[in-house]
Structures are given as structure tokens and as C-alpha cells.
Image (cartoon, rainbow, N blue to C red; front, side, top):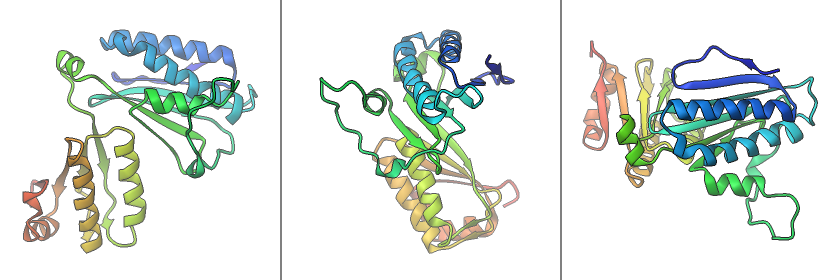
Length: 245
């Protein structure tokens, strides 16, 4: 039996034993969620994407073991729908995955190909047992529903320097590949920033700008704000100082 979680207005989430029957229950919840959000036009795509992710989590990640739990959540964030499916399996080496078009005679191997074709982006967690799929809401539907273009907010840790850049670069890249067009970084906790961190911010903004998006820093403390403006980066992307800066 599925265990619905406490729902936020823009979220539907469930935790359930890894069985095919429970997939259908969550699919029905997706239908209701999309209808409520006036996004019924995306029902076919989202059901297809959800089925591929859920079947993989149940059959491969959990070996259809009902003693294991699958967690699934669909949320509306900015102008995007984000579907996350997590299982309790060992995960897999997604870094070496090859998504190729299957032969017409092939009986298996179509799941990731379908996800790649129908999603606007997808990424796995480090372990490889959690998949997040992003689907952008069409612009005309966004306007009708008062949604903004796909925006993601991240709260930064106190340090953005050379040691932290590799992990941050991967985090930003994952979000952009998953469909984020506007990336808002909450800098209210950031105390340290060096040239490597600045270079990452510029590179991230450039990647977003190529897709019609932008980078925005908010809550920037006085010393960090002074450094960024000294580099004239306020001419490159949006930098909002903290209230007491």
C-alpha cells in the first residue's frame, strides 16, 4: 500500500512497497495532480516518463522485492515539472551509460532512450539509485497559469573556493541539464569566495545565458558584494546585496 506523504501545494509524493500494483496508484496521483494544476496536456508525457522510472526502480533497483520501498515525488517548480524516483537498491554506474536508439527487433533496452526523448533533462544522484526527470511546461501554459520560466534555487554553503568548485560545478551542471534556465543562488551564508569560485559563477551564467536564462545571487554579504562589484560582475549577472550590506 502506498503511504502518501504530507503534501505541499505544488507536490505529490508517496512511499510504497516495490510492486507493480503500487505503480498504478502513483500514476493515478500524477493524473490528479496535473489536472489540478491545469497541466493535463502533459499527462501522456509525464505518465510515460513516470512509468519508465518507476518500473526501473521496482524491477531493477528493488528486484520486485515488496520488502523494499520506492519513493516517488512530482513537484511543480518554476516553469518545470520535476519527477524524482528513488529505490533502496545498490544503484548503478550511470557515468558510463550510453543512451542509444534500440533496434526495432530488440525486446528490452528502451527505457532510457524514451526518457531522453520525452524529458527536457534527467540526472542521477551520486549512488545511482535516485533519478530526477525534468519536463518544462510550455510557455503558453506558463502564461496561462502564471508560472515563471524554469527556475531553481540553491542555498550555498559558507565557502565557494577552489576546494569546493568541482562539487559545485557538478551540482550546477546537473540542474542545467535537468532543465533549469534560471539559477538563483542564496549567498546569505557565504563567507569566503576566491577566483576559482568567481570563475565558476561566470561559467555557469554563460551556460544559462546560451539557453536564454540567467544566474542570480541573492543575500550577498558586504565583503563578497564589494569583491564582485570590483570585478564588475554586477554588469554580467544579477547580484542582490543582503539587507544589511
